[in-house]
Length: 543
Image (cartoon, rainbow, N blue to C red; front, side, top):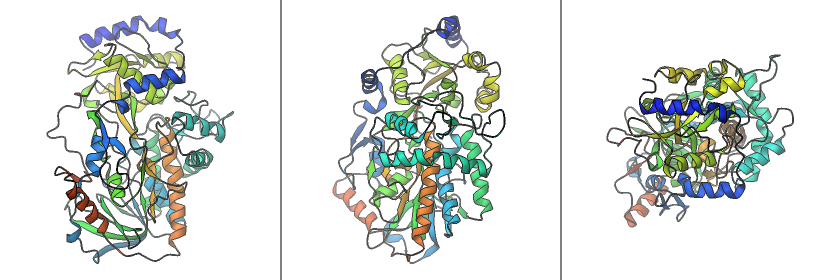
């Protein structure tokens, strides 16, 4: 396939400006310039894409229309048809979600002596964790500290993050890095082979290098190790069994969940003393019809069931769009192009061969700048199917970091494009922002406890630590820090308690509220899996 016609002509213009750009310095924007750019061009600020949710504990909160649709939908089950006395499984700890957060919570709960069940919608490990390419943050490099890490993360989140959560993230990060290495995660090494290496690039919004990586498949490498460890510890796992409702007791506490056999579509009851929700994000809702970097199962299931149970949401109106989602070829539409390429020296270049933003600005700023370049300045590159994008000049990486850098450190990405006749060591990548991360979620304390008693929340379905914009490398450390804390806390507290009563009255109240307000439009949630059979092409986004 490669680049042909108008795309090839645009590549030649890019190549003709490379020498000039190589010496060019693009300053970081001032705070007021950043705020102005984001408010005018970031998708979060578009008109008519959000509304107030009309049901539940956060009634009146503004959030994306697609999220409101899910929260205002009827349940997949009829609570009157569920026999709660027919308990299929009883466990002290029920972990819902098979990504890095769920696996970590299960391991630490098991380590504290708890009887644990881990259930996952697809295969164990299918998650956004395995799609994380760039790396994991930990403040261990010379000149770095938890204080610097704390300030960078707060700044990246517009200083609206919950400080106690950011403090826990920064403070625990060195411990988590040591734990992962002890488990066998093969982090890139210093020449002496002894210390995990903070990559020699800065991530956007970071003041110190603190990203530790395994090539460009860090999340996959970590998940492989965690999955093996869960198996080695003989923790019980249920695959293809998504959550469709939480179960509450007579005091409103969480006492279990209704899971569904994904093959037979039959629901069944699991009773638990503590429930840890680690279901990931909402990427496959495709807000505003944007492509997404997320895995197939990221359909906001945890948001739906947790909200019906009374868990409080925060920052859910804020969604991160990664600046560099793949725009061409269409077979790779939305797939993540790691921030590491910009950190290693790749330039963002428009159709005239011009740089237009400092590549190490925060993700919200860079995404807004790309959208401005395409939508307002009409300097986007147009593909044969009408998708528009901006070039990421990857050949500069080998020039800046040395010949062979791309093939050595970005093997996965190089192979991905090579299948379509594009050599990213010699040719640029066409990118456009893709829906990437759910900044908000359920409010928790520093141990993952939500306002619903016995319900813990870990990872992307939790909100507060990232504020209104997540810094690169913080998603992986987030799931392990709070997975460890939640698993440990849940196990220790479960020992002194009995199983609670089982009720679905909260689902009945939800249905009544929807009926009274004539909401729902026939929708049922959680979605569980996206259905693309009748959808228009995702290239028809509002550029």
